[in-house]
Amino acid sequence: MATDGHTDFTRSETSFTSGGVRCAATVFRPTTADVAPLPAIVMAHGFGTPRAMRLYAYAERFVAAGFIVCVFDYRYFGDSDGEPRQLLDIPKQLADWRSAVDFTRTLDRVDEKRIVGWGTSFAGGHVLTLAGNGLEFAAVIAQVPHVDGIAAVRAVGLQHVLRVGPSAISDGIRALLRRPPLYIDSVGLPGTRAVMVSPDAITGRDRLLRESGLRDGDYPETVAARILLKIWRYSPGRTVAAIGCPTLVQIMSEDAVTPAAVAQRAAEKIRNATIRFYPGGHFDPYVDPLFSTVVADQLDFLDENVR
Image 1 (tube, rainbow, N blue to C red):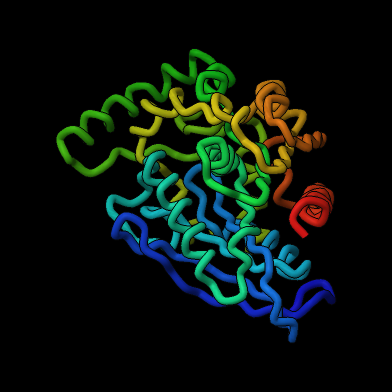
Image 2 (cartoon, helix red, strand yellow; image 1 turned 90 degrees about the horizontal axis):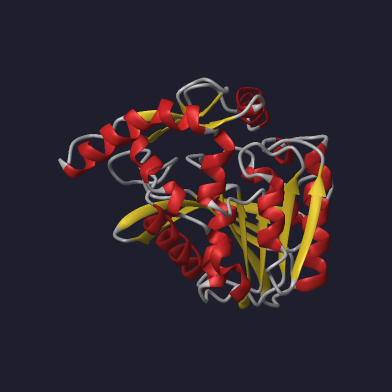
């Protein structure tokens, strides 16, 4: 198969184990006669979203540029195993990231010293956290990253916190009692009971589904509400000053989910940061017309820092 007339590639479905749980992964490989080791990119999606939601579009651009790409789903989400479903556990997701990187290093022809961490939204925070805590990436790409839990809570406002608070508390109690989760929508419009709320949330999600060839109901669009009791404490920006590898941070000017000013302040603490700003909201980078510009900047960054 091929994309946009570029280098042919193969795509295979596989998996790795993290914490005893099978995590689904898709591996893209260039088909070339060259046997030299290749750089690799490890990718995962944001808050409660499976890898099938437009990440393959990025992966196809990267493999056409000569990278091996591993795109994975966290345990409890997408095509991965684990119960209960739709449980967002931050330490376990970070462990899944480490397992995915270790797995990618074992793939044939991967140059284990040239592994790139690529994350978007919540996963953008994950790759920053991992790089800031010693995981040896050759480079990091953090697209619209979550960097400050308290800032994220402030962005949605007190009324929204009060709206979703009872669900969070109820599910926290259910967790203590080892009962099935109480779920809440991952995205919604302002005034609704959902985690990420913005005027463009529903239209953004629908475009992601449509552009990915998915339909409503292909994947659950909920998350266990207990994460709302913890998300305010998760601030990847606290450790970004320790990041030593080249890092691209891509920020949307009208981002209502991960505020631009907060992301910029965090990015400026990174010693070797490239910061790019774009007009639009949190869901715009994944689809055209902005997608082509965003991924072109990622490819330029990779060409300069990883080749």
